[in-house]
Length: 253
Image (tube, rainbow, N blue to C red; front, side, top):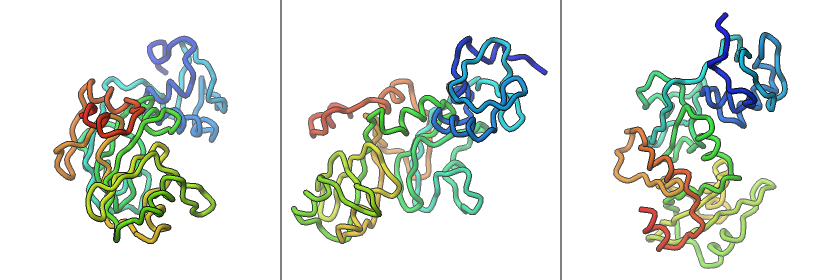
C-alpha cells in the first residue's frame, strides 16, 4: 500500500485533508467521519479534528484518499428543471451533468429545481465551505418575479422576518426593481427560502434567478453554459459586501 508522506501535512486536521482532496466540504467531511466512513491507518476514525502525521494513510469507504492535482472553480448558469444535488438517484436532469469535466465537483450551495442562474462548483472543499456556510457572510443576490406587487406593509414584513413552519425567514435586503419584480439579498439561504417568503405574503414566486455571489456577477454567460473562474473572480465570489447600497453594487461590477 502506498504510504501517505506526500498526502498529508504534519498536524493537518482530518476534515481539512478530506476537503482538500475533494471528498466534500469541511462540514460535510465532518459528517462523513462521524458516520464511520473514514479510516486512518486501517482504523475507523470518528473524530473530525484528528491531526494527521506524515505516513498516515487515510481511506474513504475503503479507497485511499489523495489530494487532487488540479483544482477547478466553475460558474454554471443553471437552467430551470435541473437539480443541484448529485446524489438524487431519481433526478432526471442534474446540473452537474452540464459540466464536461472528468473530476468530482461539489456545488457551493444549491438552487431548487425550478430556480435558475449562477451556481458555483469546485473540487476545493475549503472554497465550497466558505461559500456555503452563513458564518462567512457571503451575500447572494436574486432577481425574483412574483404574481403581484407587494404592498409597503408586506415589504416591511419581509424585511423584519417572516414566520413559516416554525422558522423565522430573514433577508439581508429586498427592493423593487421593476413591476412585480424584486431583488432579494440573502446570507443564509434556507431551503426554498424566497419562495416560502413570497408565498406567505400571498404573492407566489413566478421566476427566481440568482445573479450574484459576493462581488461575482453572472454576466452574460448563456443559460446551460459553464466556464472556469479566474483567480480574480474566485476572490470576488468570496468578497463580503458590507454595504448593500446601489453605489456598492456599482463598485462591485
